[in-house]
Length: 133
Image 1 (cartoon, one colour):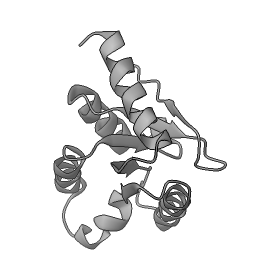
Image 2 (tube, one colour; image 1 turned 120 degrees about the horizontal axis):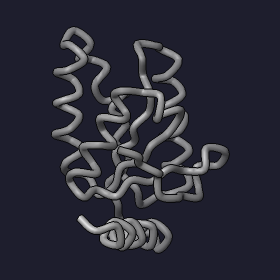
Image 3 (cartoon, rainbow, N blue to C red; image 1 turned 120 degrees about the vertical axis):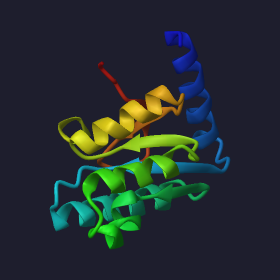
Image 4 (cartoon, rainbow, N blue to C red; image 1 turned 90 degrees about the vertical axis):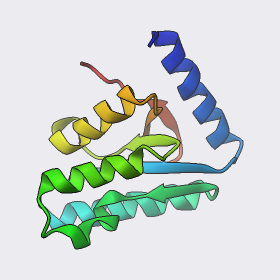
């Protein structure tokens, strides 16, 4: 895939969000087995939902916590099944330090799913995430 194709797809997604068109967003956030990360992810999902009323946000830390008895690898595979059906991947928290988030970013990149980061302060402004491979 060419670099300008990625920019075009991401620009189109930013326009959809700005124009308040319906978007299904998968929100990645580090977990690392820490309960406080679930709370941080839920807070960010709530801020995004407040600021973007036409965005349906899928928060895997909330959606998949009942699967804790499955291994992390199995949960990540289920998350990829959901991510594959979403319009955009939103990276939150210190996602670059999280192997799980990096795996989700790689999956999105390989499946032409736009990857965005919100302004963590207000969850309003987005910019394309910088993905280095």
